[in-house]
Image 1 (cartoon, rainbow, N blue to C red):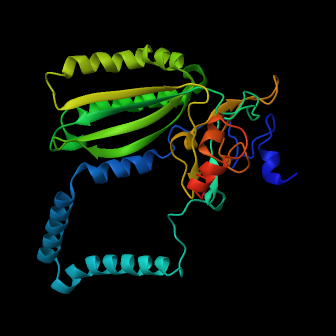
Image 2 (cartoon, rainbow, N blue to C red; image 1 turned 60 degrees about the horizontal axis):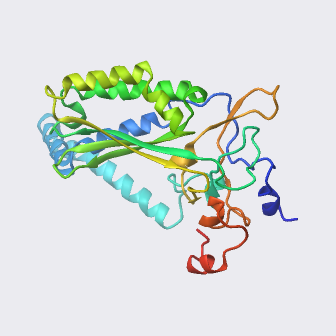
Image 3 (cartoon, one colour; image 1 turned 120 degrees about the horizontal axis):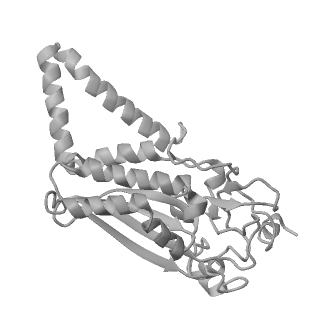
Length: 303
């Protein structure tokens, strides 16, 4: 039997691409998210103006040729690096690890860490939540720091007590422009069930944040909140990643116990999406067994 076929046998262990951990980190990606939020807080014209002002200051305090040197060296080094990567003479630092340079999927495992009999046999809740800032100062506007702290504390609570709240993980989208010229910061999160999400909404921390928001809507009308909830029942969802860093469900962590006496561990279920059960979209949803000839012909890559 081929190795790819063995990996897709129901009840067998996942061929995990990442090692199990005792507890997931609540700081995963937070630094990168913060940098992205800051960069997207102001439009390109604002950043160019600030750069021009800085260059003017350098011209005032330094000799002309010295003042030009930092910008020249920085731009030249960037152009040389891009050229070397494009020609294949330097390693591309943006590529994901080698084990992710293929097609992978992130199904939900059984509680003992084995594969489900049917792909997509568990329900999952996708919850999009975010804050909307309609102010020229963006995240530096009055009151936004407070709501950001409430959101941060709630994500730490969800992450710290994942088993209690049924929290699987999240991915934060950078600030998105709104029609009025403001911005919205959106986080996509995943939960085991709608009941778990409702329980978290009734927690003291969430209630405190909601009460605070109700008190400031007139004082700071530029601050808004939003959410969308999608309850995907069994065999109503799937995912696939190819040559891609894991995001969304690809970042989710699942609590498993290999035996009643075993120490619980958190696992990321990313695995190669090869074989009949993981080959196509409908296979990964668990709605169709075997190989979908027509679907594969339409999409040669098997996505």
